[in-house]
Image 1 (tube, helix red, strand yellow):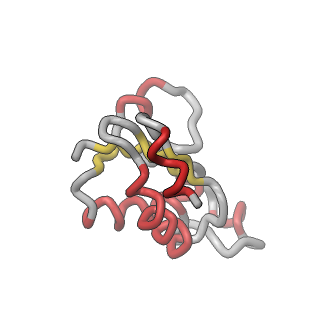
Image 2: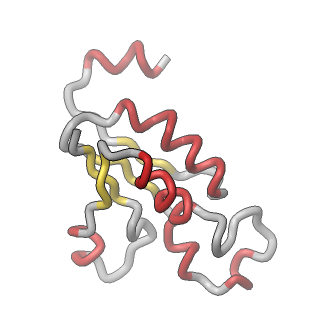
Length: 106
């Protein structure tokens, strides 16, 4: 369904913010990264989970070591079309996507 809609748009940004386990986020990255246009972004929210105390996530599937940032850190090594854009990390005092703003370069 998404592929049918894509041809009518020239600039596509994708935001990921659902299940926060590493496996799920890596799957989303693999599925949706192809839709991001050159020079645009794939934003992975809630990378902040990696910086939280483990007690904050005790009742969740995700936690420190198993979250969106750990997915990004693994995925970005294998996907040279994207780089982590740290520009926005340094512009915001508070962010839930630090290290998760990925720019498509190729």
